[in-house]
Amino acid sequence: MKAYSAPSTAGSDIYYCHSYAAWEKGSNENHNRMIRRWYPKGTDFAKVSKKEIAVLQSWMNGYPRKMLGWLTPEEVA
Image 1: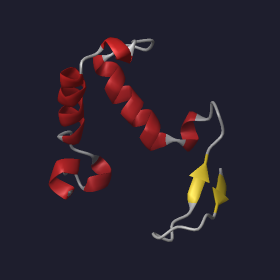
Image 2: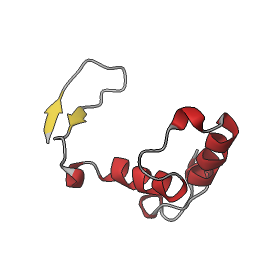
Image 3: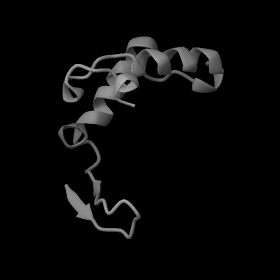
Image 4: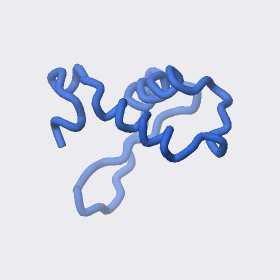
């Protein structure tokens, strides 16, 4: 994985990972896995209502995460 320093107000580095290297993008892959519980790969999200997306979003934000000490993102925010 390569770090790219870009000017930012947060002073954070931006990391780019390689295509098809799932081990370099753990958080993204975990979120994709969670989404796939509801919608299989290849789902046309243009046909999914905003209400259905909001329900999924609420479920994901209410799901406890080990990296947050088993708190939910809603509890941390």
